[in-house]
Structure formats: structure tokens, C-alpha cells
Image 1 (spheres, rainbow, N blue to C red):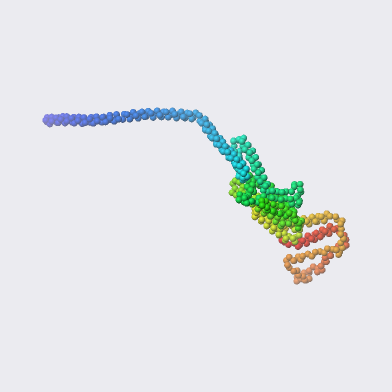
Image 2 (cartoon, one colour):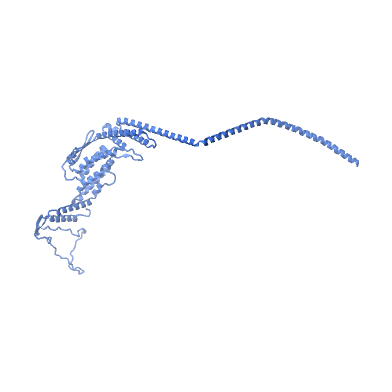
Length: 502
């Protein structure tokens, strides 16, 4: 039993010794590998150490810059927060200064435009280019209005410019007035002479608007003068004064004096309108003749003065053409129409219903007269009071007849009642034969039997009264009463003879 035990211990010892050798080798191998690792680590560390030092230096610089930035930001914030009102005030001041500078520049530009336009105006006026001169004058007026409209900006020079503009405008109007007086020449009777046929014979109108051969290509001077008046806004006033003279010395005398006839004469450079006299057929002017005379006057004016195309410089209007005949018609037509009615048509209203049918010619003449004026654009499309008055002849005739009868009756009733006339039964005025009541129906009355079929007794007496049944015995009556009865009979006879149309 001892031998196995000894061998077991020997085997254990032998195996443990072998195990120690092997473990030592392993450990030595491990140590050698650790040494290699340590060497590699040292190499890597020696390589990493400079980069780490650079990174630390960069970090230190970043921290320094961050601190500087914080200090700068704190300084800026302190500076901004310390004086914000001053910054705002300075900005506002700079803005106002910019606005003032802009305003000054615009004002200087307008002043320059004003001066340039005034120079061009003076040049055009010297060359008698009136349209260009008027346009430049209006340009200076527009610039001056623009300068005066600026709030908070006043210049003493503006008053001087306003004065200069007024002076130049009056100067322009003076030159245009002189040119107008050369083109349209009135030869009027002395002011001391009263309004009569003799004074009307001395009235003449000379129109120096007949274009020569040179002016036909360059344009008539009357167009330049009228266009300049239109640009300056003085055309309406000029035609108003012209229309008043035309009414007073041409048109109204033709209406008032039946013997006055228009006479025209055309020469090489002038058209002359004057009057001549002839014996009148009536005491008052015939409407048909008056319409023809006035139509002739307007035809002459349309040919030699009014047929000029003009343009009115207006804003916000598409059609800015100026129609001279229409302008003249607006100025004078109301007065001319009243004069024609009061001094011509009123006197032509018939005093007897039998003459009413002849008045149709007057109505047709009035229609043709207005149609001619509308074709010349003197009148607009609406029917005027003149034509309405002529067409309403029935009412005017009735009123005139009533007035005439009332006046005649009043004169008879207020006359001397002691003037008498002797009447006898033989001198009685026979009663007029009255029309048959059934004549309008074209029915013939038949005699009825004394005893009709219904046995009703007819009370009508076949015996007729004589026309002298109510004659007075021989006596004396007032002559005014006799005339009043005659007036009543004549009025009733005329009333029964009138028709529904008249």
C-alpha cells in the first residue's frame, strides 16, 4: 500500500514542476507583448502630445477671443442702451435734411422750367407764334401753381414770379387783342346817335379773314389768334363781346327794321358786311324774310370766321375740340330768340282766323331756319323756344284776339256816351244768318207732321219771326253802344266760322 502512495506524490510533484515551467513561459510571453504594447503607446503618446498642446493653445486663444467678444458686446450694448434717443434724433434729423434737400432740388428744377418757358414765350411772341407763346405761358402758370402749392415752403421770389406772370399774360392778351381788332373790324355809328334806321345804316363789319395763297398753306392767322385765346381761357369772353356787338348792330336791326337788307361784298383780303334800305311791304318785319336775313348772316360768319378747328387744353376730357359756332350760339341765341319772338313773331300772329292757314308757311320757315342753324352747329339738337312759339300759334291767336276784343270794348265803354246816332225801324241792322245746327252732321231736317204716329201734339209754330221783329222805334242811342254791338256780332261770327283745327 506504501508503494502506490509514494508514486502518487511523486507524480503530483512532477506534474506541478512542469506546470510552473509552462506558466512562467506563458507569463514571459505575455510580458514581452506588454512591452511591445507599452512601446507602441509611448510612441503614440509622443506623437499625440504636440497636437494636444496645440489644441490647448487654440482653446486658450478661443477662450481669449470669447472673452474679448463678450467685452465688446457688453460695451456695444452699454453704448446703445446708454443713448438711444440721441440715435433716433440724429436719424430723424438726417431724414428731414434729406427731405429739405429733395424739396430744394425740386423747387430749383421748377424755377429752371419757369425761366426756360418764359424765355421761349418771349421768343415766340416776338416771332408772332401766338399758340406757342400761349402754351409756354400756361406752362409757367402750371409751374408757379406747383411751387405755391408746396406747404411749409415759401419764397419771396414767388410773389415776384406771380407779378411777372400777370404782366406777361396781360401783354399777351394785348397783342392778341390787337391782332383780333385787325381781323374783325367794326365800323359803328357815333355813340351820340340814337338807335334808328339811319344809325343802323352806318354799321359795317369787315372780316380780314380771307386767306391769301400763302396763308392757305401756312394756315390762316385767325386760327392762330383764336387758338391762343383758347389756350389762355379767354375765348369765351372774346366771343361774348363779339356776340353782343353782333346782336346790337347787325341782328336786332334786321329784326326791327323791315326795310333793312344785308349787303355783302368780298374783296381780295377782306369780306364786308353792310346794310342797304328798301321800301318795306309791311309795317312790321315778315318772319320769313327775317329768317332768311339772319340765316345769311350766320352763313357768312360760318364761312369766314367760325369754320376754324380749335382745341381746348383741358384735363380729363377725351374730346377737347372747340366748336366756335356752338360757342357763339350759346352766347347770343337766348337774346336773339327773345328778340325774334317779341319783335317779329308776335306781330305776325293773324288777327283773323281766316288767315291762320297761311301761318303754316311761317312755321315751315322757322323749322328750316333752325335746321340750317343746326347744320352750321350754331344750335344744338333740342327744339328751341322760337319754334315752340311758332307752332303754338292757335293759343297765341286766341290770346291776341281776346286782348284785341277787350281793348276795343274798353275803349268803346270809356268813350263819350253823349255822342248819339239816330236809328229808325228801317235802319235796323239785319240779324246775320246763323248756320244750320245740323250742317256739321250733314243731315237734312225733315218737317214733322202735325200729328205724329204717337199722337203727340207738335207745339212748334210754322210762323217765323221777321228779322226786324225786335227793331226799336225811331230814337237816338249812344254811338259807342252801336259800335260795341257790332264788335260783339263780328266776334261771334268769326267764332262760328272757325274750325276745330284753327
